[in-house]
Image (cartoon, rainbow, N blue to C red; front, side):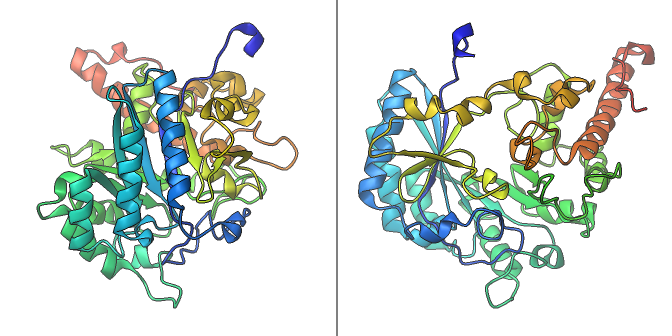
Length: 397
């Protein structure tokens, strides 16, 4: 590809794994419960010296590519376990290293168990936005998101969310991440989430692949349990008389149907412009790849010796920026491959062809996209005053 003049796009999102352990024991966690167990050899917290090197590497990359804005996401494990001092040190180090011409947006993804008012004051002072993991109503959430003793975490998380959403800290709230379990009632799940007035909701398909399929997803079946779960939520959300929240999966599919690029790896063909810096300073690809096999996310590069330019040139990093060229022949033959984009890269894995497959969720993605297409196209035709003005729907035969 490089011989043809193609060049990878600069990283814009930097995920700092400032803590490698968690205070919950979620049953579906791809870091602790799936194929890659490298967390066991990671230090518990990112050392200040590693923070400093990471900050300088990020700043140098932004400077070289003249990036006006970048995003740094504090992640784990559970990032709040590092304590407010190291968290503050990290934010200030990254912002301090950046040139005045680069705006550094900092966000934190948390299970919210430890998010008390004192922590919120610290985050507010640092200007850090907060995303919270919540799987819906109490029974749905506590099905998986439990403490090590088996006790559910919904009560603690809901209390923290009310503190974030209903008080003076609402401006910090970036949204809710909800992992789908098709045993939970979909509309009830959605309505439990929007009770907290989130700016956005991310519905996450449980991580799996062709070797280790997700729950209730038979790779040999044409059944669509996840689309069947998401479609009632889409209809409820899309048919609402007012905009209740952004549902990122739905918004991104509609953007793609309108000919605009995606802003997420989950759908579409936009290049992946994200890199992970592990607790020990190792560079990694998306940590979701840990669901595929041990070492799948590794690059064997480190902030102490390698620049982000070196990481950008890593073959596996470039593979996730190739767009349509990285899709399987089966995807190329599909009429919605530019919308689906082959699905999330990690969900394409098998132990013979690697990641050169369609998503293990292929039937679900097709059905969901087709449903959204029909609803949106029908409304466009109505606005134009003629149904025959709608674009052709995907061939579902």
